[in-house]
Length: 361
Image (cartoon, rainbow, N blue to C red; front, side, top):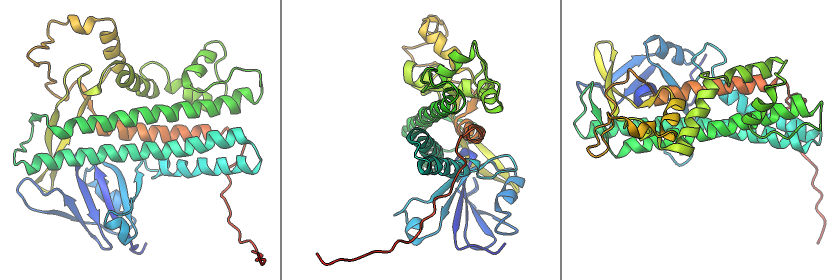
């Protein structure tokens, strides 16, 4: 594949970036711990992502800069989160398009209800992907801010003005993700339940489906996948538990132990590249239960007065950016699954020229 007239910037776990222009050279940012610039050579335009993965880097997504205005920051780049699985590479972006095509098909059939829900799903997929990018950008700001202060050392903890912004970005992702979850539940209800039984209750959230499924479990593949994902401790259940924690109970950064940023390095051909991790608790539902029952405030190990209740390591946590990235791809797969039961096959809008007649006024 020939080199395309586009700049690509990969977002990496830990806040790093890899910038590639229109040749085989790719620059890693920020510089290595020894102050030297790190570069790599990619085989071809199409092998960029695979070459980077084979070096051990984990990719969140890619910014595409196709115009001068985008490169200068006057226009947002085209952002796509990347699927860690082999295929499809851009499942979330693909689903954003796919659901807009379903909306178009419903519009052409003059079905306002399905047009509305499909349009909202398409919008919400894109919203969630952009929230993921905002979190990745917050990581980059956090990392670069620490490096600028000249106080970056691996295997340390710290807290500064950027830290709360990282967690705010994650909270926004959680809220928008669960909005998408509920839109998908509404579409499923209309397409698989109310289409056959118009007297069935109107469902606008996953919780409504789960109540119905207690006595009438789903029989179709998409419904079974949605129900299984929502079972206790499965991925969609935990996504909702995180969202409920930050919306109804406490900010994520201090819902349990006060969360601090962890510094680390990534080895690249003998050079150490700086990176960060932001922890989130593994069991959000347990944190919510602990606080709502009052057990959290009875813990003798919690020292509120001296603010000593800091998290000590990443062993009992997961990284916020990694979690959001994986959850985004799972949401993309769920969108694909629910689209299979759409009563309207996706139709790409076709713009046709019309004859204009000009009359004297």
